[in-house]
Image (cartoon, rainbow, N blue to C red; front, side, top):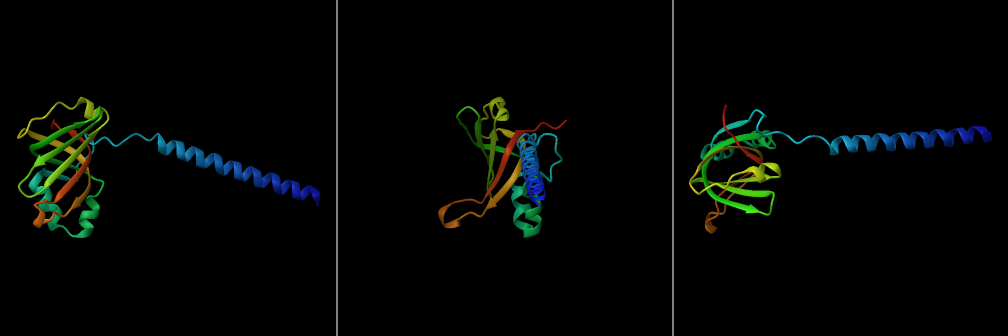
Length: 154
């Protein structure tokens, strides 16, 4: 009887250690996964800033949800360009109907040249959301793109 209890404890300890090693391996693999390359991914939407807003506003919730976390390619004019620290850049594209906010970070932000107001740009970014504007407060609807990169078609 004593022998069986010792065997059960050894097996339980072995299973717990094996499960911990498996979880550690999966965690390390997820942590070290490479980031998505927005330059090489096929965009879910291609168009101008007003076209993106029109597409989002005219679509139903399921279409908007399918666009979430997808790469979109927009073309527009720079309204505002701001560097924050060494590796973060915010860019607002000019549109008559909405703000398109683009965030650049890391190596992409460091290599990004300074952009001038009314300069035409074409960029790709990951669509992360849309906020309705407040008409009484002169707030336009806002489309947010993250991990943006300037795009030059080949």
